[in-house]
Image (tube, rainbow, N blue to C red; front, top):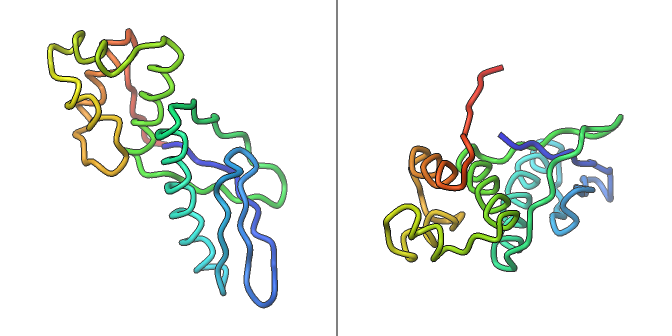
Length: 138
């Protein structure tokens, strides 16, 4: 899973959360626990901007002192890797659909963060781009 470093700054009895890699993700919470929950939501929501604009999602940096890592869900992480690879190779959804022998609408659902997609389907899409999805337990 992709995990992004976040800064939790005390502010007016709560915490403001920012991500240096994903500047669009800013949130706050009244407690540290609430701020952590809100940070995960804000990070995932910010990914929509990259998908809508068809921009590569920056890779997460290593956490610096005073930062906490906030993880994205595994399915969103896989879709981000797929989007980034499609953009790097300049492969359109139509071209990926042709390679997968499916319809462009099906590919559009694969790269939609709100649509539930089987991990095997994302792995097949990455394979069609010459990549392999690996999952590890640490």
